[in-house]
Image 1 (cartoon, rainbow, N blue to C red):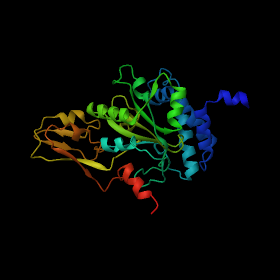
Image 2: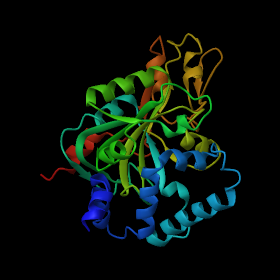
Image 3: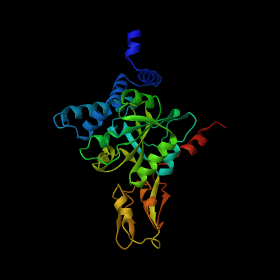
Image 4: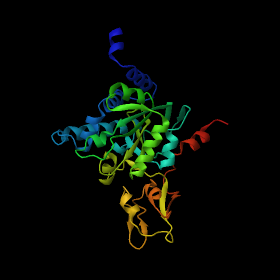
Amino acid sequence: MKYLDRLIKPSTRAFLREARNIRGYSLFDLLHGYVYLRWPYFYIAMGKGDHPLARRMTPVLNWIGKMIAAEAGKREEQENSGFEDTYHGKVVPLNAARELISIREEVRIQNLEQVIPFKRAKDIVLKNPEAIVVLDCPCRVAKPDPCLPLDVCLIVGEPFASFVMEHHGKRARRITSQEAERILREEDERGHVHHAFFKDAVLERFYAICNCCACCCGAMKAQKQGTPMLISSGFICRVQADLCQACGLCGSRCQFHAISVEEVARVDESACMGCGVCVNHCPNGALFLERDRTRPEPLEIVRLIHENREP
């Protein structure tokens, strides 16, 4: 037993302890979560098809995908569960992303159906939320000519931050919330989108903020190919036509190809995810985000904390 204690890293033991407290969290979930966190570069490169072995192993990958979806369906007793229900991202504007890395208290907000309308992985449980690690983005690393910089994935809270540091120390480093905010701001300036990621096998909850570009991001690629892994921020971009100079900057910055520019900028509402990148880059202040009540509620952690506090 002492040998096993030395062999199993403290962060792995912490992950196992928390997994035991999740009702219905299966051995399959445990193994899946461990593999995902332990070998994220291989896992994501294979999932995106960027790994040299991906084409040869397509039948195996398809089988694994069906196993994951079947496990989700079995646990929820629903036949129409899909892979997207097990791993998904919530688009968050810059200010909302800043809030997520600025929390100084432990948070437990469960069953956020109005914010995260997936069957699984819709909790925010932040333990030691000031523990933040920046990791080289597995999606970018998998590309032969990726967007730079690589170190833009923010792992938030425990046991995830310690797990990443103990297993990927050469590709990760601990940072302060101020450094995390700088990364968010610089990625926003590059035109990249902030996604809060949730995964069923990662203790069924939020664990990371990724800063994504359509050319590298696996989730954005899946979204484009018809697998709905991303959900709207809850906002939509609007144009003040009298202020628009038709410069085209917003259209070139939009990662979701939702803006076209002729005499004035026009927003394709079906494609807009409400990320706010275009708003932050409009030199004339002609764009703004408006709440869209037909879409899920925004992920605004400070508001959610206040609403879920006992009176």
